[in-house]
Image (tube, rainbow, N blue to C red; front, side, top):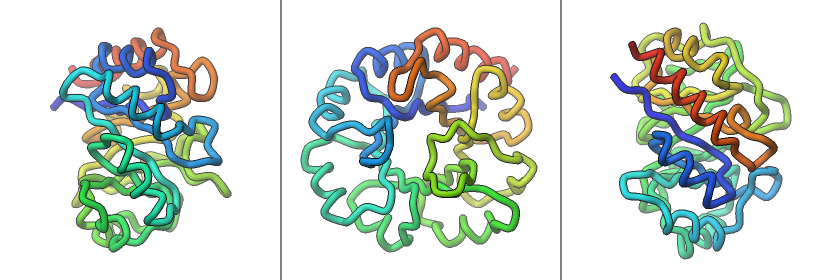
Length: 207
């Protein structure tokens, strides 16, 4: 099975096109004011409209108000929503788009129960738990905490780089991997060489 790749924290059109050309399945756009990778809706819309076909545009939100999402959706042609906070299943399902739900993994979190709680999600994104942060930390977590059989497709995130993504895929066998800081020159600015190296390692893990 081919492992899908999502490049998150896109802020520039050139980075989006480079990621797509190098084989990314999805691109993430962060609508969270506290993130150094946040992007304005108008800018995200311009980038997405310039993408080639079959690339999924994902909008990432952290504990938003319903009006925040509606305001973004009125301007931005998103395909998928990603919730990275403490949103309830009812809230996540309130919008006319499929969604994925992030879980910040640490010892004691029952991922089987978490997945059942968000059973309507298209996938479960597993990220590292860092106190006071909602992703984008560059920190990895203990992959042995991921159960063998989760009822939702797993999107593995958290501290992935060209140096460790192949080992992560072999260990966890996720449906997809999600990377942001691991392919950057600086927050929000992607490095095409790092993206290419990352993609090469993803493919090497599938042999």
